[in-house]
Image (cartoon, rainbow, N blue to C red; front, side, top):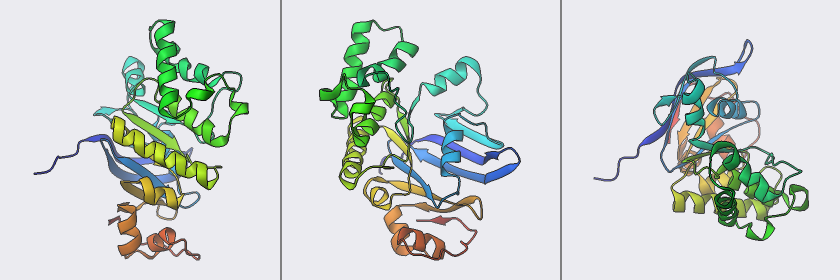
Length: 263
């Protein structure tokens, strides 16, 4: 028998949105340990809204988000802080502090959340930047480096506290094809070497085909998940017209079927 994969995130009956506006209505899915899990869909389908709920920036309208078995949406105080320590986040444009060097940006979570001596903090920050091939840019300011380097530095900062889960918001946004391909390679290498679970919001099909173990596809019309599975299988075998058109980059998207499709 093969290894049974263990889930690290369980989303159950989740609805989220803003005020009275429901963007996502009653969805459930699991993220397995060590996989690269991608959330995708067309504009306005709620990809970023879902991510913001999963990392605790917004509270869900209803439902639960379990991270390693603990209900993050319901947690408070020290329990919530402990759950936050389990994951790192790379925001869409990197969100590095412009007045701080790259090494200072990566040191920040270590200074904030640990009692390690400064020498240890410096050593850890250097090692994280080395993991993303930025050992030659430790003391550069974000304004002095390329977009791809900013994304890599933001991933290094997300890894500062050794989380087992990393959320990436549109990692390829604004990057040229070479930088985007390099970032894909980095994500694959980190996933394989460190067994990190990645949850990625993106609509970049080339990246999805290259790195995703599994995807869920959201749709703004049904406010639900319309497909789930291996992206290449969904592209090649989906019977859902909307899903096929998305994966083949065809115009004139039609109304999707309501049933979730497993690929």
